[in-house]
Image (cartoon, rainbow, N blue to C red; front, top):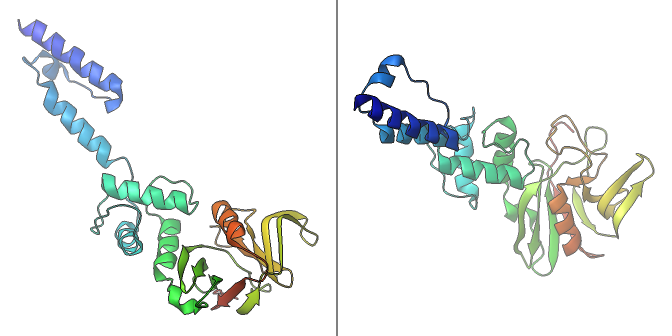
Length: 249
């Protein structure tokens, strides 16, 4: 009777392991015990798998705090402890802003982006009370769109001119728009081009936007989804307000 119970329990445990719950090694003593309780072991393995679905990053608590302030990414607990809800929220945030890998780890890139977004005060743009205003904060390296004095497109990340090619602050107007503009100086296509001063304008980034060492030649680089959105909103003559100054320029 003892041998039958042990075999049944071992079969049930093997089935659970085959279902993706992870490998469990049984000692000879455990294999000969009777009867073996399968349910408690299964519950423990599932709990561990859920907790380990995302690793805990160096900036876990800080990112939790920023995401709670920003809102819109799910429920987070500001306790510095990774949970299934925290993991899902961080992954959602990473996917939105093109952070790779979007694995839920609160690393330096995720921390930096969340901090910049949370620190962006949309009122500093001093947008027009009527119509659209495209806003760029060079200090935070963020951009957003206002309509009739209210936020129309929430702050997102950008990358502006590097040292020697600083994007100038000021108030400008969109004066040219093409879905695909060829850059003669740099031999590259600029998708969703919207020029607002000289040879500078909005366009989709052609490189990983979160490479901190990179900078544009004065243009306002956007993530693909943001570039498409800005192009859909934009019209010749719309206002572009650039404030602040990119650190290091």
